[in-house]
Each structure stands twice: as C-alpha cells, then as structure tokens.
Length: 370
Image (cartoon, rainbow, N blue to C red; front, side):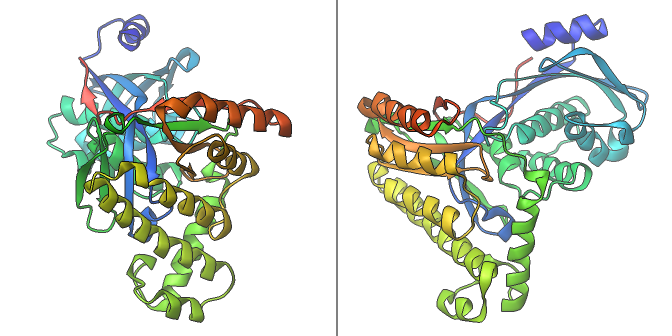
C-alpha cells in the first residue's frame, strides 16, 4: 500500500492503522444542509487514505503524497497552515483524548472538483484516531467531529452533509440525511439495473468556498429565517406567504431552499418506486434554482448542464457548493459517449479548459484497510 510505504520511509516504522474515507457527490439537496434541511449524497470511489500512529507527546508530524517533500512537524496546533489545518483541526477537536500523531496522507479525490476532499481527509484521520485510541465514537460522531474541525479550526462554516456522507454511506446506496435531527437512512441507488450512470463533469474550475461567497449565502439564509420568525428556512411551510414578507436576495435564497427540500423528498419517492429513470426532471429543476435563485453556478457549470442535456442526458445539475467544481448528469449507458462529446465540443467552442469526465458509482463509507 503506497501510503503505508511512504509512512515507513518517513517515520521509520509501520503505521498502526490505515483508514480510508471517500469523497462524495450530492445527488440532490444543495445548500440545504446548513438550513437544517434534507440532502441525498452518495460516496464516490475516490477518497483519502490516512496511515496513523499515535505519539505520547503533543508533536504532530504530517506527510502528504500530494505535497511532496519532508514531513511537516508541528509543535502546536497553531502552527498548522494550508491542508494541514484539516488534520490538526481534528486533533484539536479531540482535545485531551489524544496527544500527537505521525500521519501520512494519500488522496485521489480530484482537487477542486466539489467532491469534498476536505471531509474525506477529516473523516479518515478521525476514524483512525477513534480506532487507535478506542474512543468509541459512532460514524455520525466522527462526522460531527470533522464538521467541527472545519467550522471552528479551519474557519469554513460548512454543514454536516459532506462529513456524514464520508462516514456513513454504503455501497450501492445514497444517504438520506435530515440535517437537523441527524436521522439518516440509506436509499437503494441501483443505476446499473436501469442501464444508467451518474457522470461527473469536472469543469476544472477550482472553487474555494472560504473565499466568502459560501459564508455570505449562509448569512443571507439566517437573516431571512430571523425575519420570518423560524429557526431555519427548513421550517417555512407557507412559501408564498414567506416570499411576500421578503425581498431581494433573501427572497431568492428562501425560494431555493424550500423548493430544494421538496425536490429531495420527491426524488426519494421516485427511487423507492423504482422510477430511477424519472429523476432527471428534478435534477434539471435543482440546477435552475441554484443558478437563478441561489446564484452559485458559473458559466462553465451552466454550459456543462446545457450541453449534457443536448447530448442526451436525462437530467443534469451542478453539484457541491458551486462557483466551479462539478456538474452531474444522469445518462443512459449507451449515451455516455454522446454526452461527453457534446460537453467537450461546447467547452472547446467557448474556449474553456477541457472538462474531465468521471463516471461514479455509489461507494462504501469510511473503513479500515490495515
């Protein structure tokens, strides 16, 4: 195993545990998580693998195969910078339950594609430390720990969806998560049985949520909820009445969040009925709402969706936080090449960087490898 070999070369001994956690793609339910709403992600086949050995002192030594060079040695949590913040944040949130650690990281989640490499990094490290220190944390507790590390240490006000998907997902199934109660259940997503695939279209446009737009959207939603007198936009039951009381961006954000929650529930109903081929219209509606009401799309994402539909996709939408990253398309297997050709040609015509295509199947959540 590559990460174990790198650990051995850097630290002079075998790691005591190796854990893998996947990235995720969200089928539907975008920007609903921090509004206490509903999401439906599934884990992707790519993720982050962490090789870990605890230390008795407070020192943290970190090595990433994606950042070649000597291991980074940190005497205090405050010294963490860049990608190391996500790892050290997990240690910081565990507090006195752990000391230091030697950690080697290897990841194959496409960077900047909106597939949540940061959550995979947090969950893989948290799961390994939980295992090694026998902390007895449940998968949801690991997810919450990763979210807290990202919120309080990294400074990114993300919801719980990404970490929960990385920790709880099951192969061949999507994860329905109520982001308020944290109740979850897996939903069969057997695309192959229907001759379908989810095609991830990586626009190759890097997105950086910490740049401020993500936090701004969250603040707008919280402001709208306060004006409506509800704990969160998830609690809006009279949408028409709510929209009459709001204006500007708060009106638009509320419209998206409320209708997106309805789309999640509708899509689950179709999956339960075995009508997988019929979910495309909900994906299309989600994208239009994210583009027009939530305003988190981009020219590259819009073109990917439009060209995928022209190429024969049954439905398509941007996925993830937006401003770049990836779109997804529901595609009949015999149309996969046609959809890819259509998107590639459209990108070339507009002078955009060539996109990357990643057919995805629902994968397993965090698990120990060694």
